Length: 477
Image (cartoon, rainbow, N blue to C red; front, side, top):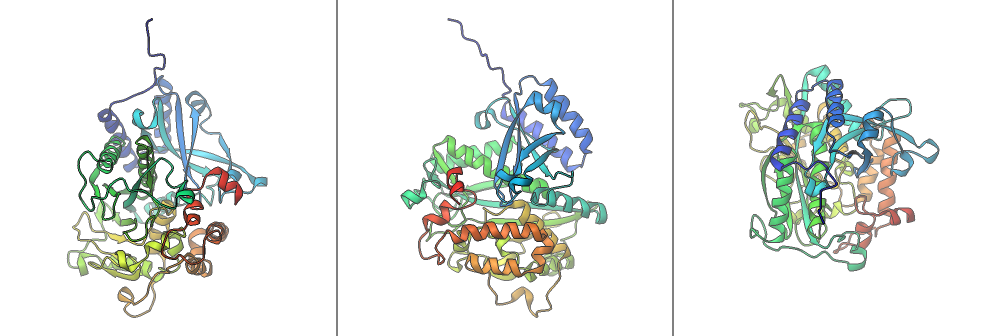
């Protein structure tokens, strides 16, 4: 019997994928008009017969990534009229006001490796639009993009971000979902910092993720096992802030999918195992104007400009207020433990890694501010909106020695919730309605967990985590 390939779907080599994604990345960086990109992408989709579907991505209020596959032919004809039920998304809308629209951000378009994401598909990020056509207030991606564009138009600022995202790899596909039964995570490697044999599961996982990232235009810098057993970090180049936040979502999606393909779980819980270092999402930010990094000053303290130091002072001033945004789960407060290089001190330093904010060694190009107190499970769009809006528009405390104050971030979610709810600044950041929705979601998760953390990870803090819960458990909330 003669066999033929009946499914003639798009499958491109990794090198070709990288070229396409880097070209699209450059168009985004150069702020090519969205209507021109829309015309170009729609023509490509219409002409490329081997594409069957377009995966549209958006994130809920807590930062969980959602994906809808639209038939390619349908999307080409109806790209300006994509609706979905917002009441099914935690933190979005009530059932009686459920209809929302998705607007395609044609600048955030990606070609994907067929062996990881399936053949015949491309990815694109979307923005959630309210019934009246305005950006939906609970869509933090839309709010971040609006804020970034406003500062570019008003001040000529380009807001830049790059995140160092740590995670763990554990045995089994559903290690997080089954934790309430097993009460443990099993390491795939115990080699330690920078050490993992070339063929072991952790190194194979890291290598595979790095290959996928390169193909998708990440422009990788370095990758390695981290301090804790089975822990990893894969670093990539910085980008404009909305693109940077999109990259975080793609990073976690790639890690999870590669791990699943290997029969493993990639976990971004901040502290899945007590007794070893937790995982962070160190958030490096800078501001450029007319192509120049305005955080750099060769004569400044730590070679950081006064503009950069004022940016830091504003973040420190609001350290308690924004803690719940940066540390968004019950489990996150296990990480703020001073015994494991925890960045829980509300101060700034060039050398002390226990500081909430660090000033890394830099030059005219790389000078930046590193906010170290962010957990990898936080909503990246909300985090970056908070960092930049606070750093650029917040007030500065008159407290003496602000940068070296003997103050600490909360060590539990209840205190963080109280600071968040009482703060006028978090209302300014998010708006009263969205702030209330976010706080209620965090309160709901906290109330389903033991009030005191104790010395081992409780099933509930994993079971009811916003990135772990399944549909069945959600319906029991």
